[in-house]
Each structure stands twice: as structure tokens, then as C-alpha cells.
Length: 558
Image 1 (cartoon, rainbow, N blue to C red):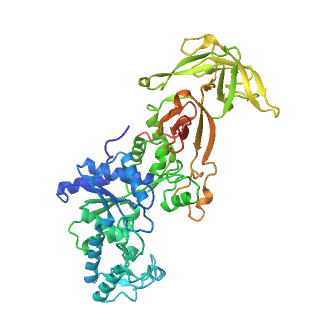
Image 2: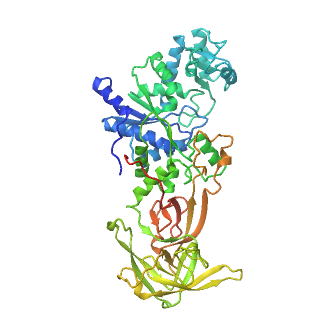
Image 3: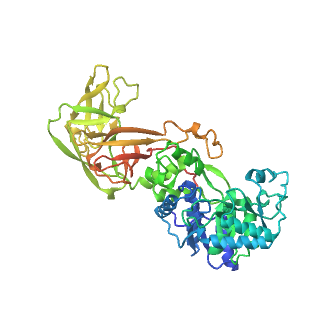
């Protein structure tokens, strides 16, 4: 179901008109993450939009790191972002860093100062915040707003030279403190930060603010359509002001689309970092995390993620997407790809008392009943097997069709067995059950003598491979919760205590050498992925990707 192009949308309409009118000659977009964390599912939409739309129009997309804040950025994040973009199946035309342009940005800031469009302010951050005004009240001019261009230039050069402490001075754009758009009330465009930068080292101690740097980067790279999420819409007037007042030769334009908000999912980097720093998860790539690397480790595929963002669509509207929709697409992607095998997560031993001792026979089992091309495999069967503990009840309720004393069920790919005896320990716990089998009922022989209502899965005991299974639930248990309703102060109180459950069980012998990121459908349990961090040869660890079924249905017009 992988889509080659984006659906009809307002951005494509704009680009079509721009090309038709000659406003642009070649479409150039960019994906510009800040390397202060790992990419998440929301970024997948931005990546897909930028790369796919540019490709549709024969254009190109650059990968650019907006690394203007050395206090939060790290080369670890740079490398993870590169890997995630490639894993999703996209290739950038050019690789850039905002820090590549620091000298050019500095010169453009000097130009603003000389034009009387920027000034050095000595106010503290709190004082600037207090005088910014509100949505209904204008801001107040800084007492330093009317410094001469010469004084501002001297101070700014001394800021660069390292004469002042962090926070002692800032450079602000000089626009309009009474503007109804708060973003135009003399925003800060440079601040002092005596910190080592991952790319430029200690060459700089002043750094441009993102909102000032971003439009300059777009213009320097010749970006034609600067595509970003809707929260930057209020920043567009300042984006245009920077391009115009710094007299950039190229004139990019910003267009905003609705961000991808997923129910029961946190995508705020600040909150995600809290989860990592406090050890609630085992890293940015924890399979419970909505990061691209977390989804990958969980077992999601690039195709499933891209099909999901395609279905979410491109519009200006904001909305909450059901988590079950993402799960739907991984089921759809894996149902024809993943081998279907058997795993027992909570083992109960079954002894088949009338089966010959010491005998092991090989049974043929299909690898995927919906995909004959995947062929068959051989699985062992003998006197002792493991079944799921929940598939046996000593005193079952009505309409319980699995195993209980006196009842007969079918073993998947094998025989009918009937429970005859229950073995318990001193505390009364069931430790094993004894059954008999009917050799005439072997699967594939066309036996029609009688029918049973229950079919259960199993694993032969002597060759069963011990395995660990990691069973996941959403980090946020409340199905109605979303990014907006999760207040940062109470966020950690809403973490689902059952988001991870680890159990020990067995898998078929053919899975002993399963490799990291191999995916399987375990009969009745769901889809699982071999964990890339903890799994070892001969001792596999499986992450639950998604359960077998869901009530979720795509709209009929999808």
C-alpha cells in the first residue's frame, strides 16, 4: 500500500501555480531539525512532506541542522537524525548546518544595526519578558532602544569578542513594540552563550536565535518553499521581515501545515528527555517512545509509517489522530510479510501419555496462510509440549472451548489431544497436565471423523528455545490524553505503570538464530520484533509490535 506521491493538497496547489507563473524555476525544500533530541513520529510527517513533494516536482530537498543553541545540541543527535531519515527511505541532496553560516548571519546582523533596524539591549531576560506586553496591551520600549547605530555596532562587536557575560546583553530587532503580533515586538536575534559548540567549537560566544537564523538559512540555500508546522504561522511576518531587511538575494516563502498529534503520545522533546533522564525508559530508542528509533526498535517499518502519514493527510487543520490508526498500518504491512510461528509466553507443560517415549516427529506447517510464496517449515512434535497457561482451566466457565479435564482440542498443525489428569504441587498450583492424543487426527490428513471447537498453539518441549517477551502498552494510559492536555508539571504522574511487562517463555527451534529486526506473527499473540539491543544468538528477546486485532476501521473513502 506504499504511496509514491502525496495526495492533493494546498501546498501542491501553491507549488503548481508558482511553477506555472515562473515565480520559481526549481522546487527546493529542506528538512531542518534542531539536533537537541531524537526525531519522533511528528517529524516523520515533516520529512515525508518535504522530500516527497520536492521529488514530485523534480526538485530537491536538503537536510539542514538548525544548530544555533550549543547548550542543548550534540553530535549524538546529529548522527541519530541522519540515520532515521535514511531508514525512512529518504536521501537528501545537500547536507548543511546553520553553524556553517554563522559568519554570514553576523554580517547580516551588522547590516541591520547600521540601518537602524537592530539594537543592543542591556535588560535582563525577565525585564524583556515583563515589558513585552500582552495580546491586548502593547509592549514598552526598552530604555536602550534609541542607542545610536555606532554604539550598537561597537557593543555587538564586543559581544562577539567575549567581553560580556551570558545574559548581560542581547541584540534585538527594532520593529514595533505596539504590534498586534507579539513576535514583532523587537524580538531577540542574538544572545551570549559561552559554550562549546558541537560544530564550531569555541569560535563563537554569541549565537543567533532560531527565528532569525532560519529565514537566513533558507535564503542562503535558495529554498523556494519553506514548509513547517502550523505553530510557526505567527512567526511568518518576522520571517519575511528578516529576509527583506537583511537584503537577501533569494526570497523564500514559508507555508504551514497542521502538525501530527497522536493520542496517548508525547512528542515534546522536553518531556521525552525527562523520561530518558529519569530512567522511566531505557533511552531515546526505548520501544515505548514515539521516536523514529523507538518505533524502529519496537518493530515498525518505514512503509507502515509512511502509509500512516499519507492517510493522516496534509492540511492546515490541527487534530488528534487515533493511535490505533498507526497500529492498523503496521498490521497491514506485516500481515503478508511476517512468518507466522508459535510462541508460548506463559508455559504450562503437557505430557501426552500415549505418545511413544523418545520419539520426535517433524510436522509441516505453513509460514503464512495468506501468502503461499512464503512456503512451509518443519516443526518438532513429541510426548512433551508447552501450551499457554491460559489455554487450560480446571473449572472453566460456559463457552470455554480450550483445554479442561475431559475436553478435546486441536493442537495447531498437529493432533487432537484430550485432558485426562491434572498434576498439582503442594500449594495446589497446576504444574502440568496429562493428555492423550488421537493419531488419526493429524493435520493435513483430511480427518473428518469429528470436530472440536478449540484450537490452541504449543511448542515442543525438548527443542523449545527459551525467549524473553517484552509486552508494551502506551506510555500514557488515558486514551483521551494528547500533547495539549498533558501538563508538564503533572506529566510524569500520568505514566502508565503497565507500559512494559517482561515475561519468559518459549519459541519454536527455528527462531533460535533470529536476527535483530526480524519480525514474526506469533499465533494469537500478535506481531513481534527481535530486539536490536538485548537479543543475543540463541537467547532471543522479542518486542511486541502490535496485538493481532483491533476494532479500528479506516474511513470508507480512504
